[in-house]
Image 1 (cartoon, one colour):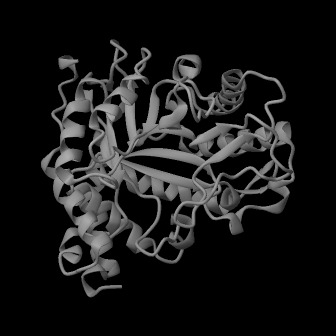
Image 2: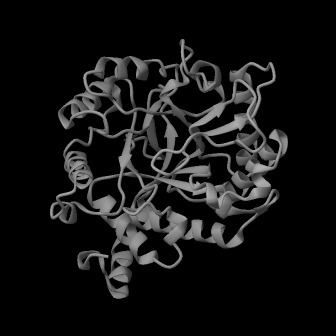
Length: 369
């Protein structure tokens, strides 16, 4: 770790004391009465999510890989994200770290989540808690992959019951995101083949069924959402529920996830879409985004200048403001000061994003839409 990232325990404690007042000032996030954005309660002030996916560190380790032994690092990363003007942090919770059997949660992991929620409260950040991750295939329990569809859904409901029970009283929860990029399998898949192909060594896409068996995919998606949302609502009646959708969820020719926005929106408080604009295709990205406008707020839950220039990306964010009600990019724990000393292309790309981020936070007036 670079010397600039090393902070003594005394400094961490001091930072915690200085930020403690933020916990008392956090208000609960609700969907706005116009159903086109979010407001804070009880004040009624508009709230536009503007933040980071804190999904792994610079080396690819997932949060649960280091949050026990390197807690000071997590504290510092939250402080840095706040200083970069974020108000939301998306956390990706791995199923295998939270469940020891189909019906039993790992109490140590649930307690550590509670500690993370307290950190968010003290830092003044809201959490998008995305669950059921199986990003590292080696960490997925064999018993989990061996479950059939119904038993797997019940185990997933137990996961969400444990998470919601831990977080129900915190004002720092922006939302519960049921799963990152779920897909309804159209044709049959082999036993245990629940994960999509890897990207950069991680499995971000996950199937909720191995075979639709003649069922209409959007109806399967709705039933799955209902199963998990019911488990959450038994423990938490207030926090918002969403699901992280791939951009090919629209009911159009070609590849489709089965999570058709207009068919599943009734089960969710708002829609989340993952959208990475491509060079020269900004108009297509905007058209795709509008396809998710079905009467609920839309958050672009994943976005980044991965396949376009920074100028094109800036235009995309600006032009999406008439549809989107929030934007979440990425932060992997290396602050701009360190990135500026690197000559790696990936570091320079991240630096351009982190320099764009605080300078382009949108105003919080949702009445313009």
